[in-house]
Length: 436
Image (cartoon, rainbow, N blue to C red):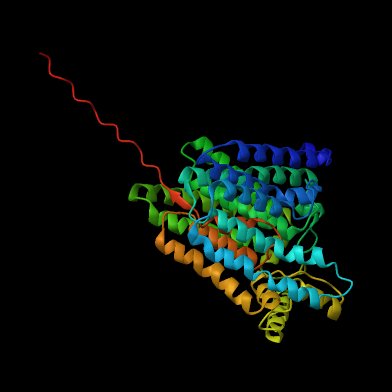
């Protein structure tokens, strides 16, 4: 709220958080080091889009760089699993595209910023994966890590309520809406709010033993969902829905019969809440929400392209891969080509097609590592309850938003953690000694 009235406080907020977490990461000792690193990374993943909105961070990609920094500090103190070697290979395979880009990018293109923009996300993922691979954390700790992502998202949500208190005034079409997104890109805002929706769903089903907590979590879920929906950006919502379904399916199969009955009861309340949220949001947007998800314009006419141009970008990038299949066209060259041929430099929305186009055959190996290494790890270690939810959230996000933000990189890395489950101590009744 204070940042809304004085955005200069955003930088104070950013630096305050940085030094606070840096102190904790450096000072804490022993096994707690891993947990502190994860909390620091999680917080800056949650705060990233908020800081971009309020211009509070030192650079546009600051959160990605900080995730890399904290992960490297963690590796310095806690080491790296020898089984994580595929991610060393992954990072090395990113390098050739830089050399290719040095020969293919336009003369007037800013080489450093263009390459950094497209590779900061993949590098962030690689370093975070190296750190997280097979690191032991408790089930309680991984849920605390998710909570640290949620805290700044709630602050971001409150800011958006102050920025656009009356949604009806700003939504006049079915196009994604910057004004309803707090004045920043609706795609990124919806993506991180979708993350918040997922975290609150987890807390509603797993961390709500009392009626008060149930009301708190479902209320926060409602507010965050409302702000995500009014952006009229669909990708983040779809990604959240996929992750929530993956979590609920695995969680339901994981617990005993008594707990399953509780989940079924909560699920009814959860679905009713979603229906109420959708109905209210639809009214506030003058039914533009329904038309948006039905792929219609404001007059109710069906749009020709449900992907809003993403399929065309995908095809263009596949053509780039076919034209240079061995080493690719070079980092950021896909965007560069669009400037040359169409006069605009739209960045890729799909990390898969971008990776293939710009990295060529090494890109194929990169994608194989990203998909098959975690699945192999899962076959050896099935303790992480959130594995499939994290992997689904990562995959859905990179297919609609690329690696614009640090969130998919960090979420992917969380799937590689070795989650331990605390056993409750047994309290045996002491036998009384017979009286002599």
